[in-house]
Image (tube, rainbow, N blue to C red; front, side):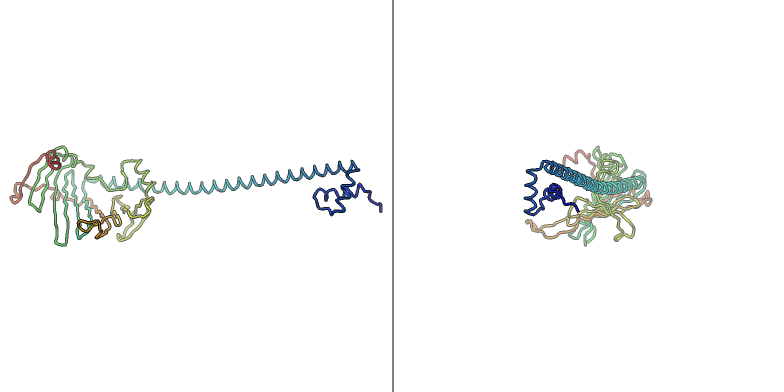
Length: 321
């Protein structure tokens, strides 16, 4: 077997020399030979160049893989955000459809020329206020009553015709009849006031409905009623103390709840005596009002009542004098 020359031995050691893995004796041998041999010095430079190119290529590959990984991460984040946005838009559109359907059903319900509406306010301290409105063919009767343990504490009945400038108010407690006439009364008698609906948005405004779909969260329940209804909450209210129940069939309100919405205090102090939920309940019936329900009584035949005729402008001025 031929013996390797010193150049061949050194060249075999050059890669280890470049990598820094040679022992001390081999390293001294290589360095001594390189001083004397130009050929091996050139070979060393070629190896260094190859190593550098290889390192550069590896760095490029690593940078490329990092770039691919970074793009994949960004793509995954964007995809996740897209999915979240898609879900949010889907929920928003779903809720807008519900809000819009409620508005349409409420409008359709209140287009009736014959309906009965009852609003109950639980006032606390043993008192409940009830407002009953009878509406038929442009005529209406509105009855306000306050109930206590002893019975009806206050009763006021108003008769009028839609868009007329006159109304008749009969107060049972003090046996007084007030016939009021004027522009303010005409405004009060507008049909939209009688057919107004207590919803958390204007049923005639697209912007209001779009806003309600964003602000309100909508759920479905059957609690206490036995039929499905919507429950509206303000999604941005952390305490969730307010909610409204809306009939799925008619689009009209069933109940408004303000939890702990009413406080009473001991007289002359700021010390809380009682905390109650503020609750309003609504009841609608259609096609049950008769002509007798809205018929104006002959006030001249009510001899036990005193009668007062006033202009509503004079009445308003008196309130501020």
